[in-house]
Image (cartoon, rainbow, N blue to C red):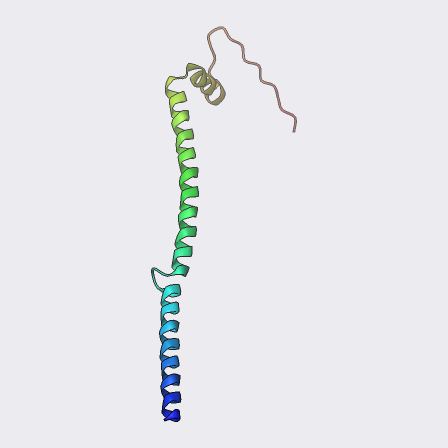
Length: 99
């Protein structure tokens, strides 16, 4: 009888160990597991930073567009610098740059 009891005990321990191993493996490696959760959290953080950067770029471009549409000083500055335009009766002096 004692031998039968030991066999049942070992079998029960083996079953419990196997079930716990399967549950732990599922908890770690399943699509809803801990490892996937950590990876998704990191990805979410990276995407939030990227979104923040892109929003700053968008705001900067929006401000530049508004300047080019409505700010006469900015329009004049670009006309002078990029296109070499000048006002009537205005002299332009070109200063050579030293290299």
